[in-house]
Length: 238
Image (tube, rainbow, N blue to C red; front, side, top):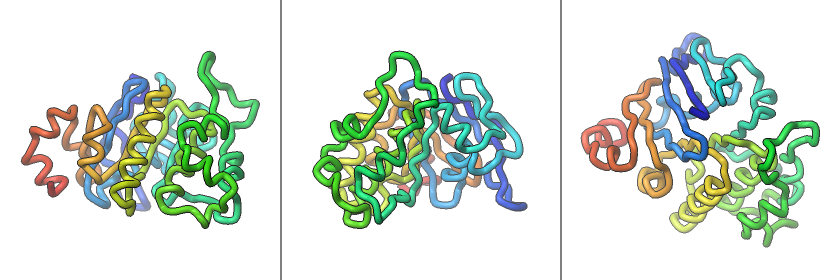
């Protein structure tokens, strides 16, 4: 497995948020983590990224344990996080936001892998190219989401963790963001997607996990999830 999360436990203070999470991704997959608000999805991403230090368990990336490493060390190993709040710098242009995300030359890039730079990003994110001189605070919510993803790609990640990319977006922009994720996956990047829009997720992800109260309660492919009517009703209210 490319990413293998084993028996992960994480706390906020005395609150036991992740209670033995197990999940895995093959290289090149797009896997979706589903669940209601407050069940531990974002904490799972932050624990993988080192922003929350796991109390127990392993996070293996190509068999290397990331648990206990700092976020910048994990980023240098090829993991990028697209946060739910986007964190666009409002007083910088689109192009300047992208430049800030570029990987330092000293960081290794896998042999034979095309590196990301603003020109490559503009080929996938044509809307951003049209707005390359606009300030961050002049962008729509969908454009800010695209910029957040594109900026993460500037670090040349092998794996990106994407947290609720369609939250608050109009249906037309939801489709645009989902197409963008498919394009990124097809470029060779592995994606772990946290999403609440089940309909959109079913169109692009190949496997699914459902979380409830800090635990994984379902794992399966698209066909299995579509057939699991009672599971969807109980844990996703759909």
